[in-house]
Image (cartoon, rainbow, N blue to C red; front, side, top):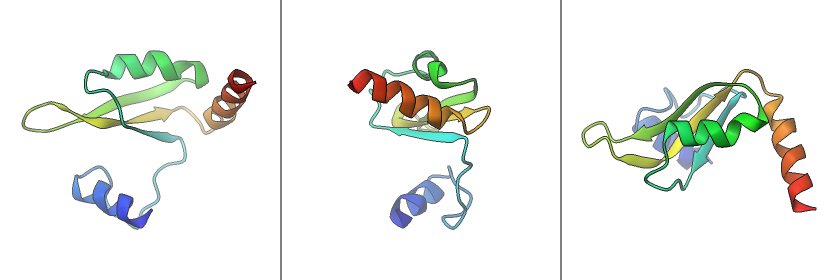
Amino acid sequence: MAEQAQILEMVGDLRSADEAPPENVLFVCKLNPVTTDEDLEIIFSRFGKIIKCEVIRDRRTHQSLQYAFIEFDDVSFFDNYYSILSKEDS
């Protein structure tokens, strides 16, 4: 886990590897290269109100780096997320 934080620090997505990310922000990885901010917002909005949704892109080429951060208005989205997923698994 510390290695992942160091990578995020190196690419500029985390100010410090020792800093804990906000609890209301979801990290999503292994995205399809064509996935957009809007796609993720449509998919994840069923779990709660989204403040910001951003697919991280290469600064030079603007190509997707295939991961994103989704900021919700509060941490209750986790409860909604697990509740909905557990119903779908049943």
